Image (cartoon, rainbow, N blue to C red; front, side, top):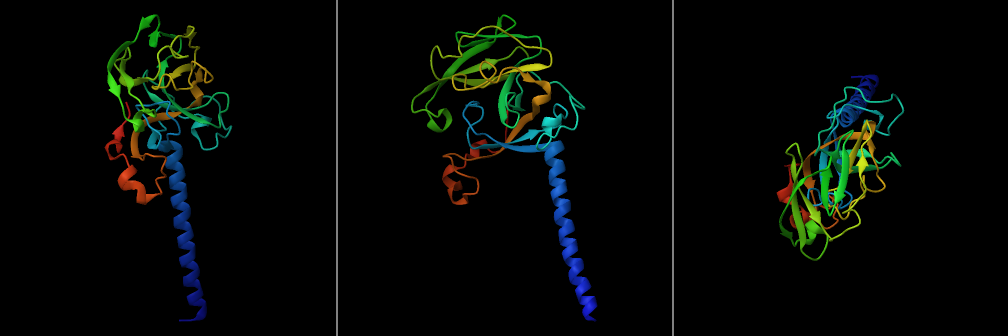
Length: 249
C-alpha cells in the first residue's frame, strides 16, 4: 500500500466523521424547529402544575408555525402556516409581547372575543364564574416555595379542562381586576400560581396568535434544590422521580 493510499483513507475517515456530525446537527435542528423543543421552568408562576427545575417538551406543530416558532425568530414570513387555534386550558410557551426574545409559559384561559375578569380570586369568563373548589392545603416548600401551608384549589374551565391553582394570599393584587375583552387574534394567559404570576392581568397583556411557540406536553426531567441536571451526584437526593414523564394538564 502506498503512502498516497494511506493518506486517502485517513482523509476519507475524517470526512465521514464530519459528515455524520453535520447530519446529526441538521437532524437536531429540524426536530427542534418542527417537532419538539426542550424548555426549562425558570420561575414559580405555574406552581403547582410546573415547578422550577422541571424540564419539558413543547410540541411545535400544535398551533402551526410562525417566525417565533423558529430559532432566533428570523423575519422570514408573517402570520402562521398550518395554523390551528389553542384550546382553553392549554399550557403554552409563547414570546413575551413587550420583548419577544424572552419565553414565557402560562395557561390559556381567554379566547378571542372573551370577557375575562377576576373577582375575589375567582376567574370569570363572559360573566360566568369558573368552577373553583378548595381541595386542601399543601405544606411542602419544594412545591409551594414558602414555609407555610398554602391553599390549593381545583379549577374547571367551561370545556371541562381541570387543573390545580395556588392561593398564596387573601385579597392579592390580582384577585380583583377590571374586565378584559380579548381582541381578535389574541389570547388571555394566567399562571396557576395566581398570587405570584406576571401574566395577562399585568405586564404580559394580550398575547398575539403569532407569538405562540408551542404547547407544553410532558415533563421529561425534574430536579429540585436549584441543582443542575449535569450535577449527577445530586440526582439521588434531588431528582423528583415522581414527576418524570408526567403529562401536563
